[in-house]
Image (tube, rainbow, N blue to C red; front, side, top):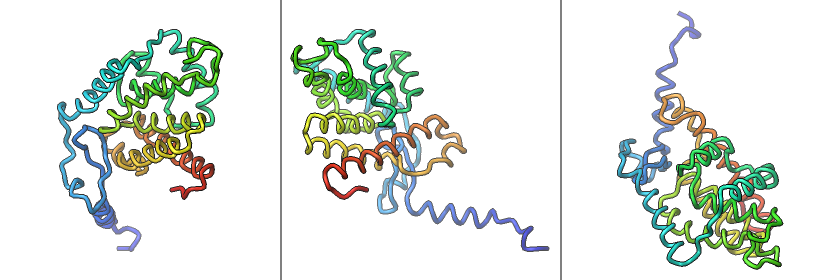
Amino acid sequence: MSFDSIDDSGDQNLLSALTGLMGRFNIGDDGQLHYFGSQSNYHLMNSISDKSSMESTVSLQRRGLAAVERMGKNVPLSIALQEHLLELYWTWQHPWNYIIHKEMFSRAFRSRTYDRYCTPLLLSAIFALACRFSDREELRTVGEDPNTAGSAFFEQAKILFLYESQAPIIATVQAAALMSIRALSDGQEAFGWLYCGNAVRMALNLGLNIDCSQWVTSGLISEDEAEVRKVTWWGCFVLDKYVSTLDIKLPL
């Protein structure tokens, strides 16, 4: 028997076992994929989720929307105006700030259902930026002042973020990144750095920086979801470098 004919599956299994000790993906209490390091007891949990855990993020979103209503910060917007702002976003913001998977987001938006790819928070963050590219006065807090375009959506997003960030999903990470850019465009440097940091930390918590190809192979997540995770992580990475350059702070 030649050495070339020896089955190396045992070595591969050993390698998988050793790398597994460094940490692994698991389903958190919020029903989302999380990455738990080797020093965390959470990585020993079974990767099983139930319907009740999936409801935590939805419950927080509802509480956030209720808070927006109570505080009088809700911004009503027709479907036509929403589509107008989305078109502006895809045309001017998306090409250089690639952090949202357009196809997956658009699929959820067209179905008028909120999921991990399209949430009220993410829509608010998108609109807060897209308004900057529109000359329509109804999108401004002060009609004659273009600098106030999208300010109402940004205030709405801030409230929603306080709730959704308690059980973050991929859309929460994307929203925080967009809110960072919006804050920086307003000259709010501290807020910009804060939201950028939140986006990166949530991305790490969700394991967006980890290769999840084996999860795709095993059928636990789809190829589309794996692509969304990848796009979101690299979007956060680039934003972190950008903000660090502006603020002379250490990047990742």
